[in-house]
Amino acid sequence: MPETTNSPVADQVPTPVEAVAAAAAPEQRDAPRSLWNDAWHDLRRKPVFYISSLLILFLIAISLWPSLITSTSPYACDLGKSQMGPANGHPFGFDTQGCDVYARTVYGARASVAVGIFTTLGATILGSVLGGLAGFYGGWWDAILSRISDIFFGIPILLGGVVFLSVIKGGSITTVVTFMVLLGWPQIARIARGAVITAKQQDYVQAARALGASSSRMLLRHIAPNALAPVIVVATIALGTYISLEATLSFLGVGLKPPTVSWGIDISQASTMIRNAPHMLLWPAGALSVTVLAFIMLGDAVRDALDPKLR
Amino acid sequence: MGRYVIRRLLQMVPVFIGTTLLIFVMVYALGDPVAAMFGDRAPDPATAAQIRHNLYLDHPLWQQYLHYMQGIFSGDFGTAFDGQPVTQLMSSAFPVTLRLTLVAFAIEGIIGIALGLLAGMRRGRFADTGVLGFTLLMISIPVFVTGYLLQYFVAVKWQLANPAVADGAPFGDLILPGIVLAGVSLAYVARLTRTSVAENARADYIRTAVAKGMPRRRVISAHLLRNSLIPVVTFLGTDIGNLMAGAVVTERIFNVKGVGFQLYQGILRQNPPTVVGFVTILVLVFLAANLLVDLLYAVLDPRIRYA
Image (cartoon, rainbow over all chains, first blue to last red):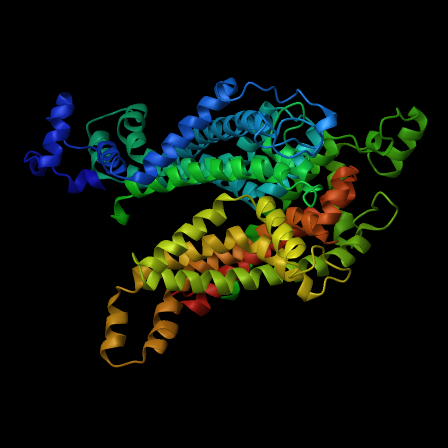
């Protein structure tokens, strides 16, 4: 725990790097560097962090405003141009329906990024609240929650997804996100429960309890900030795998459905034509892989920064 | 040891009931199996009621579940959409998927541990960076993308393997699908082994073993690997279930007539007995694999003793 290694005394002698940082942010001059400041300091020196963040910002920007980099509609299709290669103004060529592959690849980012971010938010909030309370209060609530998460762990997530989504027949982003939150929260809950149990036994929490702090104050003021780090690490890495899972489900025909533009659907449709027109598969597949890669790289960098054991 | 096994088996009971109940409710309560039989047409009410009665669907859900479980324990998994008993589908599908999983498991274990050992022994050097970059790519590229790319380049363009698996699933045909199925897990195994090996390589008992003049090969195999493999075995064990479930995607790409294929057909045609039956067996495999891993700990690590 950096809180114990970074004693305030040691921090009062600023190293040159810290002096510069302190000059840039004068309000932090007197405070000892917290875990978060420390992690931020660590992240800022990593090229991987910059590359993945830039990629993610770019992806978020084009999911919000796809027209920034394409003026073609993904629905403007001309069957006469079916499976044709690159042409003027259509750098990636056309798919079987004669739609512009470049426009569909750009518009496809929205579904993937939305599903990834909303699933992570939902699963993290649900998982850390339920898991955190289970870890803090223990007892029967903890026992019930642990058995429930055992049950969810017994079903491989892809299998559960295929069964559940094929019955629901929604196909909208909301349905897919709801289901993925439902199957994803136990993973976060386990991490949160463990982190809260560790934090609960720390001396500063015992001290707060001895001083008569209420349960809610102990949880919010002392435990939550210290139990958050492992949860954030797992959530960032999970974001990438959620995007990959959504694409797999859409590829199998049970996830997102047309008219939503999704890389998984496009790859599935292109897969039967791979021998004649591989470009229809390669572009959305490349975009999907780069997106997942960006989020997993960010997750790796955040983990390295937040996990002091690895330094 | 015996008491531990019994305790673990007892703990598996609520999980088994919970998972099968969850799947059962999803399929039977949220979907309408009778309407699905008629496709887009509306069924005749009298016929529908008759079918409902024949399939035990006119009882409350909990009775349906008990009835179904009773059937399973006497070996009756119901009938698939084409009139075949589900058990017959299983006896043709499970051997195929088992072979595929075995091939994937062997690739995952051998190559994953070898890469991890290589990276962990040369931490921070070129081999290490290479393995880290390679595994990052493997984790990031979704399985169905690697599947189609490998199928296209290795099988179609360079003609090094068959693009589809022949009937009977000979092992030669299963190598390419096995690589695809093993891909992501292989990366996790390599990373896990790397961390574990790098940690243990600094341990005192390794220094002692080297100092007393033990051959390097023996230090690695008897001391370093044996101690480093404990977390890896945990992962490998829990991964068997994921591999069999992941076969849904791989079997579709390479046209393997295994569990994934039958399960997918069952879902497409909304045939509840097929879906619930196959998922139940997969869950059992998953639970059994987890138990096996816990028991293997004692073999790998003599410090662990079960009371």
